[in-house]
Length: 328
Image (tube, rainbow, N blue to C red; front, side):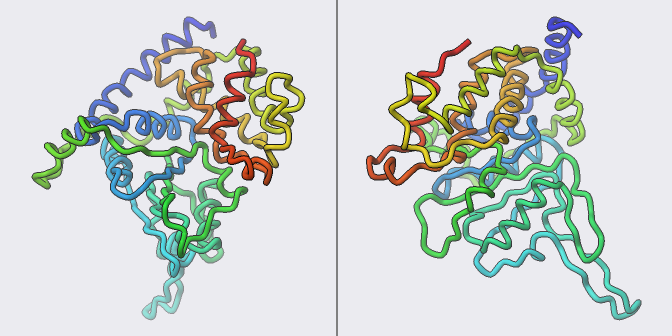
C-alpha cells in the first residue's frame, strides 16, 4: 500500500475523532492536551496514569469519554482496605444448587477509572495491572476475557503521602503515559462556573461504538514510519540509558540510575503513530515523537542520588535529551 493510499484511509477513518472531541468539549472546558493524550492512549491500546490534585475533572473526563463511545464505565475507589477480589470478582456459594458461582467485579467494563491507585496495597495494584497487561481475569479456576476495548485511567494525588503505597517502578512502566493535569486558566474557570453552577447534567451524544476502536487501531498499524524515525526513537531511548555515548548530553552521565526499557521504544513508536492518526496523517513526522515523548518517558527514568542531590528533575533531563539528540 502506498503512502497516499494509507493517508486516504487515515483521513476517512479519523474524521469522526473531531466529532468525539467536540462532544467532550460540551462538558469539559480546556484540558485539550489531556483529552488528546487519553485518545492516543486508547488508540495505541495502552493505559494512562494521571497525576493531579483533586477537583480537576479527572472523573468527569473519563466518564464523558465512555458516554461518547457508548461504552460501559466503572469507577473503582482505591482504599487501604481494598482486596483484589473487590476489583476482579469472586466465587459466591449458592445454597440452592450447592455450587460456587462467579460474581464478576467492576473491572469488567470498557472504561475503568482507578481513582487514587496509590492508596491501595501492592497486591491490589498488582491485580489491576495484571488485568491491564493480559486483558483477562481469573476467578477460581476459570479465566475470563475482559471486554474490548479495555482502557484504564488511573489517578494519583501528588500532595498526599500519608496512607499511600507508591507504585513500584516495574508496575508504573506498564502505563503507556503518565500525565500531569494542571489548573484551568482564569477564563476557563469562568466558563466552568457558568456551565456547572446549575448542577444539571450536560447531555452528550454517543458518536462511536466501542468496537470502532478496533478498526481504527488496524488503520494506525498501517501508518508509515521511516527507518530514520525509528532510529530517532532508538537514540532517544538509548540516551536515557547511556548518555555518555552522546557528546551533547555526556554531562548527564551519572544522573540517571536506570533508563527507559525496550517497552518505552515500542510504546513511543505506537503512540507516535496514534498521534499522527489524531492529526489525520498517514505518516509519522518527528513532531509526533516530540509531542508525546515527555509524557511517555517521565515515569520510566529513575534518577540517581547524585541527580537528587543536585535537585535535577526527570522533566529537565528529558527536555535536554529531546533538545540535543539530532532530529532526522
